[in-house]
Length: 243
Image (tube, rainbow, N blue to C red; front, side, top):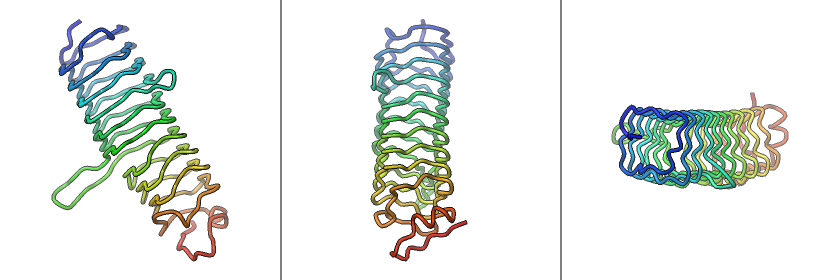
């Protein structure tokens, strides 16, 4: 099987192939299996993965910009795939099992994780930002409908991100910047939120049991329902807006 731009792989076990520095731009992988594969320096810009099993694989310095993963399994026996020092800008993960995956110093501007299982996943210095000129930095990304229980999201920088319907149960959100984020319908039960910035975030309909406003980094303009306001307001006199 030839690893080439635009190649199409159907129902193949590709575990024995050498992906080092391969150019697989716009390649298509349907029902394929990759087990313990080291994908180093490969170009997978625009590649499509559908119903694939990627088990204990490591993507190092790989170009996965605009790649699309649909209904794929990237985890087994509490071991997820690793993405390190690569580019995943505008990548899309749809209905994928990414539990215990590791995203280590990767570019994720505009990346989408839609209805994915990210239980126990970690995002170490993952960058959802992009510079537009000298002084303009914008962030973009979405985790709508995903499970992020026990995930390590400490120091995550994704202001304005879409987290609607996510479960953050027991997740680590310490020092995360989620200002202006859409957190409607999320579950924050027992999440670690010390130092997290939630100013102008929309928490309407979220489970906020145990959320300690006094330990948050910012809460100005936080949107909550009247019931949530009643539960959260303390004698601190914090400015919390209820709709």
